[in-house]
Image 1: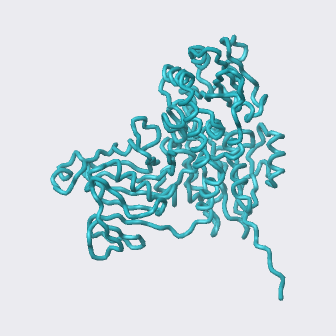
Image 2 (image 1 turned 180 degrees about the vertical axis):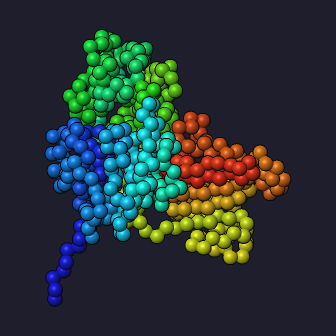
Image 3 (image 1 turned 135 degrees about the vertical axis):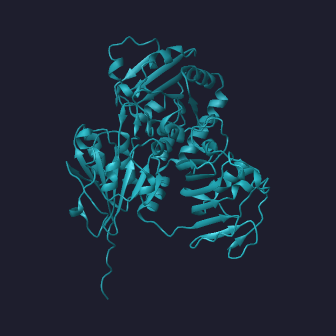
Length: 498
């Protein structure tokens, strides 16, 4: 009997612009932790800011490093499963030099993960070179990155998804607040000027909390040599382990320079939430994908709101404890390495998709489970749905794609029917909806229409809409109208409140 063969270990290449301790690089490290059965190789364009501590961490994880290297067709082997390009894109010297492929090799997934969105103040990055480099899949770090990256048309790629960077929530979840008799507000970030608003010190000084202390790690150049307000301390980046800093904070405050920076995703906030520190942050960028206003943190439009919510959390300790627990639970459920693993496996080891055609008229779609609320010939499933209390006869997380063409206008409860479509959709499921535009006569002429929609109605379900109390959250792939018919293409974001 011949000896059993050991299975070939699949390989995943990570192409990085540079190797330094920043969110996109740490995200690549977390990918390696989430997929330990893969052999991970980091290709690095340049070595600027190479951290010895990070190198030790990589070596400990068994990650191979190729310096000043770019993945090409010559690196393809039977073991190669995929290439993940961690795109930052604001270094003109290497723009476009992530990818040397011109065609995706058979059996290899070429995927660009756009960490930095196109809208970063004066930095208008364009990633249109990816279309000519064999890339088949796009991944965005947040709905904000998806909506604000010029030069990328999701329709021209095989698939598009949102994969939020994740952290070791078990590790940060073990952090507990050290009782020192002080109410402490703080933050940590790399000491870039753009990471702090010019009025950040004025904001801290305006917060009226007795015996409060403000502790920040990462000193921007514009604050060096400046006399700090009373009770404000700045530490050099890395002077204190992040876990020890978080154990001393009650609130994380985050406000950047709006003219030069929008966070595509903020790892600092993710870590704080996992540690039970309540975030009070600006209402823009990828922050709105993490913070559900009033549930696990607060989204702020002005300094007055920052001040109000910080003081509110001080005055109402029960509210703070409740939101702290919500933040931990949200991070554990949605932002852990386990969820990252699930998303990556769907990307690099896709399985057969389950697709639903939710039709009101006899429109049969081959390859879909065809469902109608009426007994129509050719449909696989028929079930009545109460238009005033719509419930769809499917389990949570059932479908990878859903078509709903000219059906939701027959439902009276607008929020509930959208939430039902979201409920039965998996994370990153594509939902395609067509419906009459309320500005056209046909919307009112049909007596079976029970609801009327505007092309912008879907904005109510996009992260960051403070007036929305719906659970459903979507990234927008497409939103347009010809005046008669509205078309939406959505990515379902599986963030649930607890």
